[in-house]
Length: 223
Image (cartoon, rainbow, N blue to C red):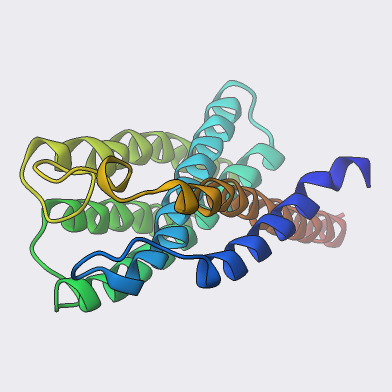
């Protein structure tokens, strides 16, 4: 129980985010109106995605230095969790765009960069499935994972800032904290970031345990 305190914290923070995010007052801004509450879900998911992808890269680097099936599995499951969080982030962003910009998708550098980044990570999953040799698959996947992270992060956070964008936080458009993230919203937003990030690590941990158990069963069958 002592080692699982962060899971209880994740549950508490996410419940708080869901309740307070829907009930606490928010700034009354033109166009955004009540849709600004999506800030508690859409943006924290990207934070969770980023942190879990960092963990995936760390496991990949560790694998290349000391190849073990466990490190490969943990890297893979962390990457899969990051991809899941990223896809949900794209979905919530698309819904938000529909209500604020009037379209599900627009030719915006921030949106296109995020979509390309997710396709790069999608190729990671395809790459893994193309190998039958476990050691070769793990080694190539680890190398590609590092490449994917180094390519995706600029697409998420750097390149969109170099040009004008409708998306807050990108070039020509300040982030929410600049003009409408008031004190009430901060009381929900920051716990939401922590909660979604902890959930990402929790999902990756559960998926890794299942994969490791399957690996042990497979090894016993071969013995």
